Structure formats: C-alpha cells, structure tokens
Image (cartoon, rainbow, N blue to C red; front, side, top):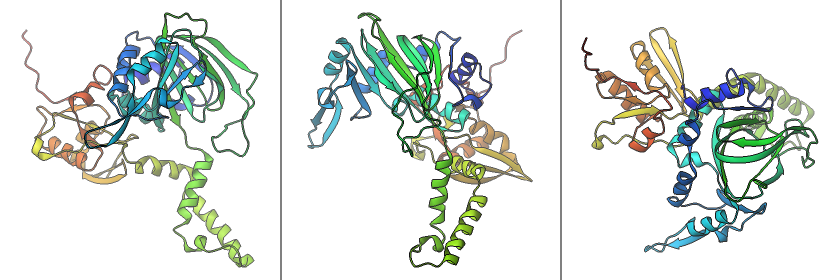
Length: 403
C-alpha cells in the first residue's frame, strides 16, 4: 500500500523503509503542509468523542500534570430500556480544556477512518501492529511527567505547538513486564525543543521523554498523534513456544516425580520445537494468521458494493506456484488459478478498488475475498479514509479525449 503519510514520514526522517524503526531517535518535518490537517483536527477529535460510548482509560484527561478523575468528565446515561452507557460529558471536557487541560483518546484509529487506514498502511509498512493515540492540550498547561514507553512511537504534530524533551534509555530494551524495574531516568539529553504543525519525531522503546505547553501562552493549543508500533521480541517468541508445547502430552505432565531421563526428553523436545518454529517462521506465521481487527460483511440483499479494500493487519502474501496462486493473510490460506493473479494483486494491494466497469470475474473474486474476510465493502465513511492519501484502483472506461 502506497500511503502519503508513510512516504512523507520516510522523507522527513531520512529513512529508506521501516528498518530504522526502534533503532535511534530521529526528528524531521513533513514536506506536505496539508497532510497534518487531513489526518485530524481538534474539532474533528472532539466530534469523534461526542459520538462514541467511551470509558476510562481509553478517554483520559489531565490538569496541572495530574490525571483528572473519570467522574469529572464521564457520565453514565440510562436509556429508555434502562441500559447504562458511559459517554463523555462534553461540557465538562470543554471546561477542562478551557482551564488549561489535556484530553487523550487512545486508539483513535478505531473511530476515525482516516487514521484507521493510516495505521493499516503503517502496519503493512512496518510488519508490526500499529495504533494511534491523540493528545489535545489547550493553554499554558503541563504535560506528562518524564516517562518511557514499551513500544516504538512516531509522533506527528498536527496543529499548534508543544515543547518536548527526549532522553536516551536507562535500560536496554525495557519491557512492560520485565526482570528489573526501570524507574531511574537517563541523564543523556538527546533533544529539547518545540514541535510545530508538520513536525514528526521517532522515539524508540525505552527512551525517556516528556511534553508540555508550560510557557507557551494561554491562547494556544496543541494536537499531536502518536503511532505506536508493538514489535515482537525474543520473549514474545518464547511465549509462543510455551503455547505450542501444550500440543505435546509430554509437556503437560507434572515435573515432580519424573526421572532425570524424562527431564532430558523435555529439554530435547523443547530444542526441537525451537528449531522447528524458528523466530523467522514464528513472525511469518504470526503475520499471516492474524485476523483483521474489524471486517464489514457483504450482504447480497444490499446489492453489489461500489468498491472494496483489503483489511488485513499485515500485507497478504501472494505467491505463484505452477498454475496456481497461493494467498496467505488475515488468518486464511487460499488457492486460486493463475489467471486470478492480476486481480488478486489489485484487490489485495491495500488501495481502494472501485468496481464500476470491472469485469465479472473481478467482481466475483471481490465477493469471495469479502466472504473470506480479507477485504470489505467500501462505504462512504471508509472511502473517505483513502481520499487524497491512497491512489484508488478504477476499472471505469474513460471517455475518449478530443484531439
């Protein structure tokens, strides 16, 4: 998938592909001045919050550097069926912002089609699960205390400005669940400055950082989005081997009472299991077997969809083998005749495919991919997530041009 945001992040950070994610701190500026507002604006964020049932900690607020109790900005409404739903008290959110506070919405990509497509593009690019959090701050307000994240972060300043301080790590590759606590900040200052609309920054896992608007004045604001990449680790692979071992009866028996020979058998079996499921095979199978986070079904009674788009978390694998084509992705392994390869590559490209004028075999293939969960029908809102950011695939015949 060729997405405008991905290509501009690479240019801004001087990267050639995703290999630099997690390796070093980097900072740059998007060369497209219209891109930040295309991704998200403050009013659009508040509109998303207004229209959703939300709870803490997905929706959080901060004032004077401290977290505001959820009861201050969340209300529980009881509908006529006496069903209680939690949603934001927008008047309370307004007061928090106007008094110099901060509103945070985690996984904003779950609600916004533009950021949903952006996260999918970044996930295909990086081969890692990607999500987005939005941070809106108003006035002369403090931010989060110095901290580190257990995932890689690419921060994009969308509007306004915010001051940051970034330090190096104090523990190599720290984890959320770790053998040692990581509470002492590093003294190594890498950068201290102000992020303005269009600026982009990469903060590797474990790098200490803080952001604030103190001293920026009461009349301004800041909106930035962080794209988080949850990378797989050696521990993740070891956990996978632990789960895979459950299929062997020998690993399910008690250790107590077993003789030394039985223990050695387990050691040998575990070694064989690790050799069979190498880290490379584990990563390949993880990416091909992960189902889409969400999927819009195709209901025949509604008529043929106007268009479709791939919704797998990672780019599907399309491999030619003799006179067949093997497709692996989204938890499915499908086999097609070789004639289907061009259409498969278009439908599974990550680009929106509009079916007006498409041949019948393409439409039939699109229906099958929707049924299998690799693609979904495009709606007006979901199509908007691609507009101006991802080039569409069209089959419509263009009228002849006059000479």
